[in-house]
Amino acid sequence: MNTASPVEPLCVAGREGDVAAAFGQLLAEANPGPREIELKGAPAASPWPRLLSEHVPGYSPPSIECTRVMALPKLRLDQPSLDAWLATRSRNFRQQVRRAWRRLEDSGAVLRVSSLEEIDGDVDALSRLHHARWEPRGGSRALSPPVEEMLRLAARELGEERLRLLSIDVDGAAISAHLFVRAGGTWAYWLGGFDDRWAACRPSVQVLVAAVEAATESGDEWFELGPGGQQYKYRFADTDSLAAWEAYPLVGYKTMKAAVVALPNSEGRNVRGPTARLMMATTPTITTSRLMTRTVNQSGR
Image (cartoon, rainbow, N blue to C red; front, side, top):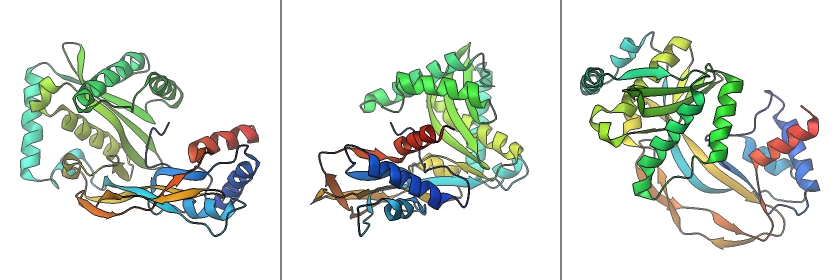
């Protein structure tokens, strides 16, 4: 299951070609052979589609198919404090944040970072709030019992410095819960949810502001708000990049022309453009996450 984006293979800088070659060897030995390789939500400038296409034997010439592109809003953490960062935002934004937080405080709200002892119950609260928000829109597949267990394990293994769950509690119950991950000088918003009864107090915005403050204090460089050009993200972001869903077919594939997809521009608004082709075959699709697992297992590390 693809549980995060942007995502791409992880390796030591300068060893990308070696890792791509190892992936190619695994694919050559696969039985049944895959019909295509997919990178779901990779950074649009990622070299991995090209590297993998060059190192997988039995296919020439390589043909990379882009089926989806999403904006990735982010902000540079170049201010010395939260107050300095807020000063770069609009006066309306600052007033809304402060007014809404006073209303929460008057209701007894407490902003809290999950401890290891609290993480199990707080992942439950995150799941409850997220699914409640998405149920009227047909539901969400982002959180399932296996994914929730993965989050609990990751929190215990990585600790608060790498995985942080921020919640707002009122009368001991979470009304907003949001998960952030951190690596390589970047904080990234992973997933969240809040109780609609508190929507007027903008609990998600309050948690994001608190996360920006923590990221600023940590000395990191970037804060990513996740794929998608939703308007609220651009109240935080000062730039964006693109995440792309890319695939390339292997020997024996069949194709058919697809329709069109909506591609967001740098401002998060949808524009229309042609997609590539849909891959039609009877053999499996190999995602990079599955390849990475097999490579690690094979190396014994």
